[in-house]
Length: 299
Ligand SMILES: Nc1ncnc2c1ncn2[C@@H]1O[C@H](COP(=O)(O)OP(=O)(O)O)[C@@H](O)[C@H]1O
Ligand SMILES: [Mg+2]
Image 1: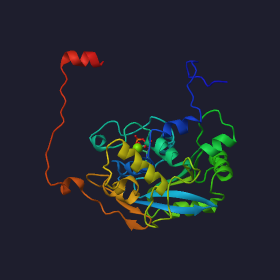
Image 2: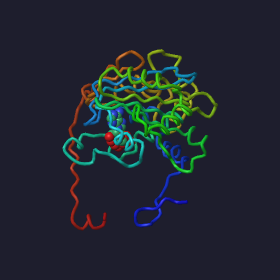
Image 3: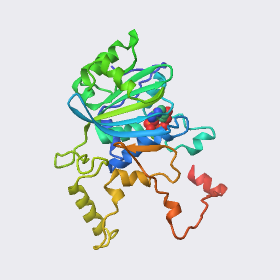
Image 4: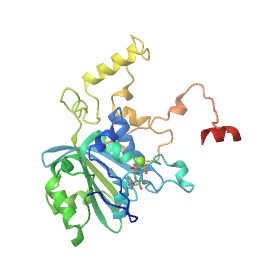
């Protein structure tokens, strides 16, 4: 039966398949990675470092993202695993925040893989959360449910069982060792597994060609090249810029003013300050003015 509001009106619910639909806003996996870095460097979290690694966990290849930012309380983690909740909407700091819609983590993580585990500690408590399409499918869930457990309290038992039965962590010891791998008192670790596959059935990310990078596979680079040439964006003799297929190259130019040091597979990203490398620089201030009548039209 549909859940009702306190006034007896039906509450809207969300189908698990929406997790995938929502992720398609990222046409490219690197922008999904950027969502996770944005979250770690946004005001209020302010991680100094962000580590990206490729690890094996219980026979699964995983993407691992660790930050030494503020971490989260269980309530904050619940908001992170819900849709449209953001705490960056007001105040001065919010002016510098990248994420403001409360959707980046959900669209980004589910673009990279089908399943994600979040381990977060805020100096007080340690909390684990799971957003998993595989889990929702296997329990035939009708709506998105997100097991969240405070390590370890009695009322977390149902969530703990869900995580141990349906994720890549199989014991409390494993959970503790993930918290230990966050190298500070506060911070967050995100593990993503069942990494998305391309049309040819192969993983859409190449971890082998360069052990210090994550690249798009050759076949996708060729497709991209063809597309860019056909659209006239790339001349026949030109090579495709490496930021299109190398995560290291992309991350080196991602931020105009980098606030967080990114370490990709054990090697620091050398930020290239694009604005300082241009021969000619022109400053243009964007300051739209709306006339009263125009404002009425917009409303
Ligand atoms: N790495 C992180 N550390 C601490 N808090 C985080 C982290 N990632 C996400 N959050 C919290 O989860 C919320 C939702 O994140 P997200 O879905 O990306 O939306 P948005 O960034 O637009 O708020 C953020 O506003 C933040 O409070
Ligand atoms: Mg965000």
